[in-house]
Each structure stands twice: as structure tokens, then as C-alpha cells.
Length: 476
Image (cartoon, rainbow, N blue to C red; front, top):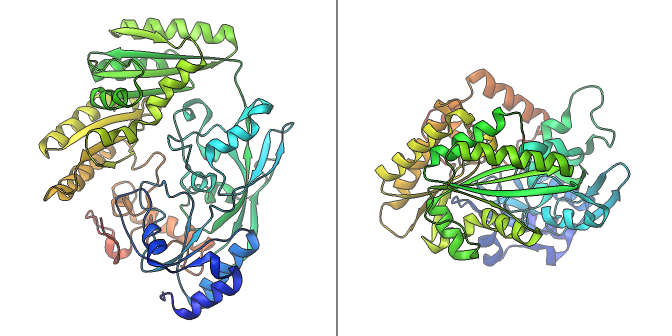
């Protein structure tokens, strides 16, 4: 692969104009990383505004043999949008329009830079919303959601992004433009739409996305339970699912996380509790009332300390603000955090959480646990100050152990954040050589150039061992 040269920049400026092709130190510095702890290097930053412009940028990259990386809002946590080796960064934030809405068939065509929450706000007057709701939904983009197949607290019942994307217009790495899928849902033949969703930018750049919209429920109840032990909270989650109920959301936070959140939002959260469980049920009023009654009974059976049911929309919004601002509240404890998102079977939650606490304690690191308890998607935040000597080595050693413990318990590497660079060299923990070869073949079928977000997700033949090696030019 080649580096960005003055002739590459000139060709890009011919396509986009000088103002939308940036090579200054400020822009290159800002776009050398996403929200992870991994930094790379950008060769040039571009801001296309149409599918045609994206296609022309990709064609410039192809002619010069320069790698390119698509980027949305930069909220990714696995280094998926981190440019390596001076790549072209294709920023899609200016492609931020809701192009059309069909309220009868409940679908919309949007550009990739549309923010997740803005889409739901745009269709709220129709009684509709976009179901996937990552905690970063105020700032993450639909294009990024598609790239990582993102989830969120309310995906327990509704499913993750792939369940809500009908079609994607894609600029392939060779510059061709295709539409994968269609408004009518799955058709005959291979599900190329499904292959593209979650491909982390390795198969091309999404320029238009057809999403499924979901009707707002007629009634919602939001409950908060607190417990003396994390184990009691985790067992409550399993008991709710075992009782045949699938709530709209089942979220847990441990004591340190609750204390940080409460200091930030002042919602009256029980800071002395070992864990709190946020449960939401939605649907017809009579069914919701019955679910609430049964869930409260289950929580009390499992020794919950107190029960709090949101009395109005304002209180419900405040409780959810606590859950969705948990990561930001970390700054009240330490300036930095390192976050994983492994998934483990619900039955393994208590045992794995116990091991997470032991790992963090052994390395001398604070850990806050906030996670999608309903589907076992853990989000352990290792909280630290990277200015302390040797701290980064401890943090990454602890993170590596947490991933291995999760996989050993029957879990997987990632639930919604993606593999990116962060977990790339841990892929052999889950996949054998034949599995990885099949994934590489699928990637090559989309990207014959090898230029689309290279070095991500799949370990190179030299990196298929257990050790975690970043590509040249990246650092943590």
C-alpha cells in the first residue's frame, strides 16, 4: 500500500474542492483516532457530501493504491475508525440528511451521518422510532451503527442494528455503487446486506441506508431495584427471563458506577447498594401492568432492597440518563477508562463478574461494571490515570484477562463495539484457521483492492497467535 502524496491530495481537491480536503496538523491530529485508546496516523482528511463524491474519493484511493477509512462521529471504542499508515480518512458527518420517511410501511432512507437520536426525533411525531439505541445515541451516527452492528439497552427485545436495516447503498472499494437488500426485506439469494452490516468498513462505504422504524409502545413502565450483592441482581435477571418475559431492557450498574452516576445526575440512586437493576417493560397497558407485578415479585424473591417505579416520563428520563451517562461519569473518579464489551451466557454472569473484580483488584485498578444484563453483554470499565507510570501496561493486561475469562465461560469477544484493532489478535480465541480464512475470503469478495480499512478485525498470518500486536503506526 502507498502513502498519501501531494498528487493524491491534488486529485482529492479536484473532486471535493480545497476546503473539504484537509492536511493541516489540527485535522490530522483530530482524526487519527476514534473513542478508543488506540491512535494511528491520517494522511489526509476528506469531507464528501454525496454518493458521487464518496465514489470519486474511493476511486482516487484505488488509482494511487492508498488505503482509506470511513469515519462517522468517532464514538467507536475498538479502534475500528483509527487510520493506520497515513490512510485517507473519509468523514461522512456532512451526509446527515433524513432523505425520506414512509410512515405506512414504517421505513426511512437516511444518509450515514444522521445521528441515531436525531432519527428518532425526526419521526417522533409519527409515533415511530429507530429501535437500536446505543448509550452514545446522542452523538453516534447511523453509518457507524451499521458498521459495528450496534446494540443498546433496548435491543434485548427488539434486536440489534441488523434487524432494523432493510437495504444499504454502498460504494464498493473498487468504486462501483450497489444497493444491498431492498425495501421489501430479504429476497432470494445471498444476504449481502446482512454480510455488510457489522463489517466495520472493510467491505465498502455506506452512503444511503434504508432503516426499519418501530411503532412507539402504548405504555411503558420503568423500574429500579437495588441489591446487597451483584449476584442477587444477576440471578434476578435470569429469573425474569426464565419466567417467560423479555423486557424492553434489563440493565445493571454496580456500586462504584452508581456512586459516580449519582454524583453527576442527582437522581436519588441508592449509592450504598452493591448493584442496581434497571428494568423496562413496554406494550399494551394491561400486559405491562402484569409484567410489572411479576417482575417486582421476582426481584423481592431474590432479596432486592427497594423497588422504585418511575411515576412519570420525567422520572423515567432521569433514570435512563443515569444509565446512558455512566461512561461520562467516570471522569469524576479518574480521567481515563478502558472498556470491553464481551458477552457471556446469563447463567455465567455472577461467576464472570466475580473474576472481573478479582482481575482488577490483582492489577491494582478500579473497575466499574455497567452492562446489558438481559443478554449478558458486559461493559467493565477499567478506571485509571494514564499518567501513572506503568498504568497502561496493567490496564491492558487486565483487559486481556477479562476477554479470555469471558470466552472461556462460553462467551464471545464483542457484543456491539466491534473487533477493530483492539480485539483483532484475540480472534483465534474464538475462531480456528478455517473460520478466519472463510471470513477473509468474504472480505476479499467485497474488497478486491485490499484498501478498505485494512489491518482491522482479521489477524494477519503473522499475528494469529495469542499475543496482542498493533499494526505499525498505531499506539496506545
